[in-house]
Image (cartoon, rainbow, N blue to C red; front, side):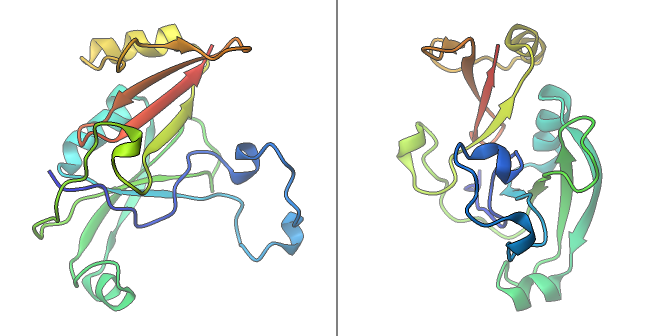
Length: 179
């Protein structure tokens, strides 16, 4: 299976929700056109990964696009390969919300990253999804044969929240956080 390669910077939440410290730059003065950062993941099997993120985790597929070979080559993203991109958001997201972009290339991938632990390889290591009900989420995942790693959901000290980690079809970590 190919390694996970990031074509777009990664988080699954608006940037403002990820920081405990208010931004020093007001949104109006920001050099960015959006307060959202999208995620791009190169996968080994686009259909299997889409089924995992949509059918197992419950993300909603939105219209995707195809990266034209000329654009991928001229921009330096790929070696002049056309690439289909499937896009997903959290259910009920407003237009312009963070998107998860899954893509599969036809060229032979490089060496697979060590996905044993977060510290096994440098680079983007996981996605975080904040869930409303951990038990309901884990029950839904179990129906698809997906089980949490290690000891399953663990309590985060000093909170009412638990943490569970699963892996997608390529071994990428997906962190679930919630009550």
